[in-house]
Image (cartoon, rainbow, N blue to C red; front, side):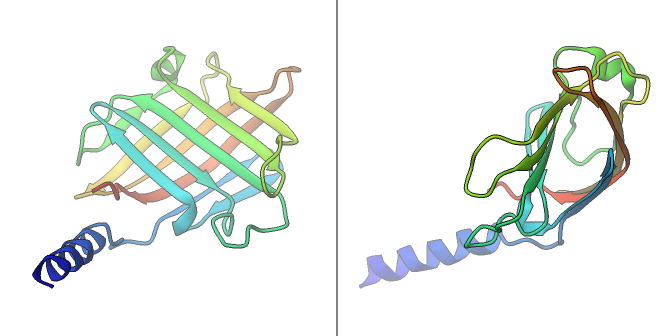
Length: 168
């Protein structure tokens, strides 16, 4: 019985420590799409001086999954310092260690997206900035120029985020 209570207490503690203190959000205009993501669809994973920030259309994390299409935005780069602001300009994104992807219209329950866009590393529009860091909560802005395999382009403008590092 004591072992069971210890296990339950540990599980409760782990759940509390992973509890979200701040609701997350991410918005941007991606081409003609108003992209909006909610708390459950955003993940920030900093590892050393690198980070991965990914988000899906609001409601995509629901069960059962939505029957509508789901868009996904992913930003991966280096230069991250835990608890500090960060500015990555177009020069930082020219390096091969930084990448941005946008998957438009991934079909429900898996499947291929309608279109896939990747970072146009030559664009001077590429920018990612953490303007406020408060503990494990980060706020900032971003803009990018993306392109697909056929040469089509999509601008990512007015990007804003508020995310939390929720790793244990």
